[in-house]
Structure formats: C-alpha cells, structure tokens
Amino acid sequence: MLRAKLCGMKTKEAVRAADVAGADFIGFIFWPGSRRFVAPSEAAALGRGIQRARKVGVFVDEAPQRVCEIAELARLDYIQLHGHEDAAYARRLNRPVIKAYRYGDGFSAAAANAFPADFILVDAYRPGQAGGTGESFDWQRAAAEIHAVTKPVLIAGGISEANVMEAAGIFQPYGVDVSGSLEVHKEKSVEKIQSFMQKVAAWNRRH
View 1: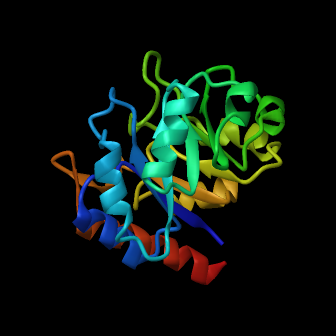
View 2 (view 1 turned 90 degrees about the vertical axis):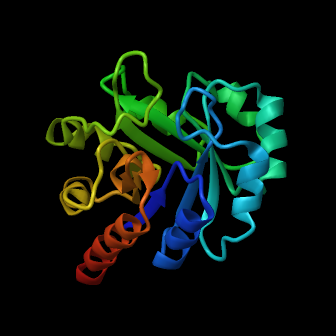
C-alpha cells in the first residue's frame, strides 16, 4: 500500500480536503525560511480539524527544546528533521522522528539505517536549500541505494499526479511526500489535492 504525506498545509480548506481524500500524513512547516511556514498556534488550530491523518511538523536545525514545545502545542504525531540534526539531537525529542536526506548530498543508506528515526524521507538535493524545491532527482540511479534502506521510506522531490505511479513503481516505497504540485499560485488547491489522492487510490487498488 502506498501512503501519502501532503505537506506545507496552511489553510483549513486544504487540511480538510487532504484528510477527507485519505492522506495518511498532513505536514506543517515550522521553518521560518519557507514560504509555507505556519505559526505553531495556527497549526494547532488547523490540526484540531483532522480526523484520521497523522500530523507531522517539519523543522530545520531548530533548538530541540523548542521542537518539543511546538510538538506539544500542535499535538504532532511525528517530527520531521530536514536539517543537519544528528542522532543525539533526535534522541532528545518527544515524538517519533522522520529524518529527511537529500539524495546527491552524500546520501548513505547505511547512515539512514543507523539514524534513530521511524521513517526515512529522501528528497532532491539543491545546494543552499533545505527542501521543498519541487525538483526530482535521478530516480533510476538512486533506486538501488534507496532500496538498501531498511526503514520505511518516503520519496519526495517533484512528486506529482503525473509521476506518482512511476515513483511508486521504481521505489516501491512506504509512501510519497508532495507539496508544490498541489498548489496553484503558491496556494494549495482542493482540486489538486483530490486529484492526487485519486491517483494514489488507483495505485493501491491495482497493487
């Protein structure tokens, strides 16, 4: 079964659409450097309307104590680390961890396997950016190494309605992570959320 993490949510309409459409994870960005940043209090309010999806907070090199505070306030189910956080950092947190790696930035399956995380997310690498670029990486080249990751893997980076089935076929991942492809004029589109989730559901029916 292919799971879907829909990230960078900022509005009640988008959160509801994702939840109703069957998203497994709904992500909120707590990194101020992102245009998808949402204040912890706003995320807490948005999260109260979620019925079934698990809530994920995305952080980049934030102080661990602050991460834990936000996780409590927003009632997060998972903490996603998208910076240079190490194993000791992850062990200080109060929620299960999703650790993001950028393929092409010295990615190592062995390092991913050793990291104290429940899930590994593999994103595209773009120098100077923590993620959310909307760009994909060389999937065929990356497949063998990513298959060596023994933990559940989420594939990110340029995933869209047009290529989600290709990504699922190449990686056979636990799930996919999407954000930019769900947007129109830099805002989440209810129609695009619904259409993307229909593609995921179609894949799952066939497999």
